[in-house]
Length: 331
Image (cartoon, rainbow, N blue to C red; front, side):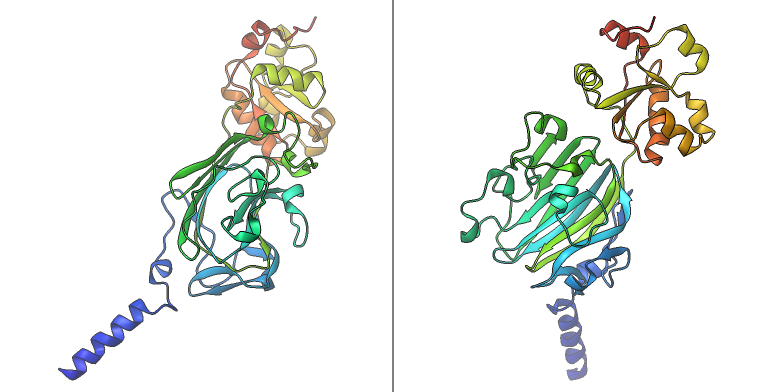
């Protein structure tokens, strides 16, 4: 009887021991998602490996640990879910579409979503764009969603095209279009070249404070038709920050097309048009709008261009819709 009681006590201690996170050790990514952290190692991550550690099944930015811990893989459009636990005054960040930079300003060269104990006394004079969940320097998040320091929070981030949505503990704190948010300039008055990136690494951006992470999972999203209005497309074509790519076949192009558009038939892309030859036709330093007759081929072409590293935004409106909206027809 005594032996049985001792076995029961030891079993209970093993389950409830604070050094073991039983829930995390059995974590399985949701359907359609892929886990980014195995609870045992930093496999799949690169960058500031000395600033992070695995403790009790959690990914930890250790006290005093700085630098950027980046996924080895790059992502464009995705949903990422994770849980995090802050310490008093802790400061970190979730970098999205980041270049592979271990030490550097990824709030500028990538895009940073603030992770911060914004209830700390030392942060009482924060700018609105510095509170937890804010797109740093770009979009101010709704405040008040964090649980008390030391408790686990759940965060979900959806990045699709120029749209970013952030939900913390069930509350939507950011739901914004990056282009709309910056049409009159950035909130912090700085240049943010990272805003132009359409893909990059996911990263945790350490600032020397302890923050625990767990249950990190991601689902990549397929391209969808852009939310950009035709008026905004016209404006970008006018200021030469974008080009229009007509992906219909040559015979359709010859029947009529928008003035200034570039012809790149979908068939040539799907056959594997040489990247150097493609670059001679389509510049990489501009936004690329693809269009066809009814929208379906513009999506397929956009996927091919995305593989080549283009910032491509497929249009659903077809050639006739563009002409009806005032896009000039080629003579």
